[in-house]
Amino acid sequence: MSVIEEYISDLNSEDERKRAFAAEDIAYEGLNEGIVPLVDRLQMEDSRFVKEAIVNALKTMNGTELVASVIPLLRCDDAFIRNAGIDILAAQGEDSYEPIRLLIFDPDKDVRKFAIDVLLQVGNKSAQDLIAETLDDVDINIVITAVEYLGRLESHDHTARINTLLKTTSNLLLRCACLETLAVIGDNESITCVAEVYPHSHLISPLELYSYLKFIACQGTEQDLPLIIALMKDKGQLMHKEIINALGGILYRSKLDMLMDDWLAALKDYIDSGINDINKYELLVMLGAFKNEAIFPLLVEHSNSDIKLVRQGAVEGLGRYGKEDARPVLVRLKDLVEDDEILEAIERSLELINR
Image 1: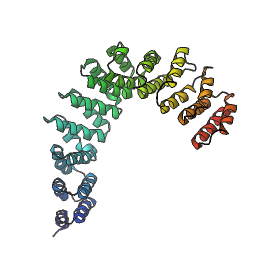
Image 2: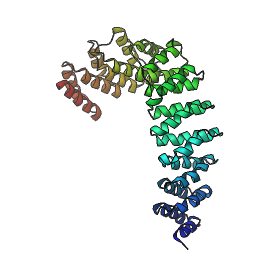
Image 3: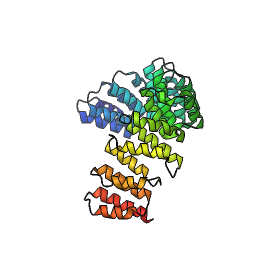
């Protein structure tokens, strides 16, 4: 009996460990004659341990025969087998491109979806270009997936296509996907495009508003601040994470030294509202980046809070603010607190003031 015949025999043994070791040995010795037996065994195997051993073995092998043998797994009803096929094909890189190119035009929409799942894992420019070809798919869910994947891969080469989709689609979920992808890969044209699609931002539907705010967080300008301030009052308890991220993104890009009085007043009210302690922490740290005189007493006040995160945010904010008058406040606070994290924050803030 030849070596490969012995391994194939072990692959069908009643002993679970023998089956797993056989799969590993076939891959280790690069025996392509074992590809088909491995794929066949995978589809009939009951042991999860052996299945994973086979999948890991196939992922280390390569060649057109492997790709041809694994592609049919994408049509399997078993989710584990399908996902295994995706992982194995993704490990092949460029060897899987041509077969996958055919699959993205397959009559079965599920197969088309699994094909772009493979391309997402491959991730390089060629894979991104193939994913972009599915932006014209007849199934809206495929298009939405393609848009999301191009965002996850930061595929700036296809920004113009996403801009066009946003302007032309009437599908709510696709618009949301476009907004979130353009948050990552958007350009100046994207900013113009979004402004055209949403001329009255205060009228955006609740579902779209989440995605819109993600775009604003990454691409928004000072012109969007009135909307964010209004949302603090209207939806501040429901969308605090999105609102704060949008606010932080805008202010970071603005390079402002001072906040307008009405912005600062709105932020103070928001901190005093019922938002989570972690959100109050974020806002207090954020305020430390600006030099309005009213910010210093605000931070000092919150440094005396009984709530740990609020106190820590104020301490870190005082460090960023950099005012020499903060030194005695922080030194006094060192004698009043015992929490190690706050003590460390105090030391860091004192170092910032010393610079």
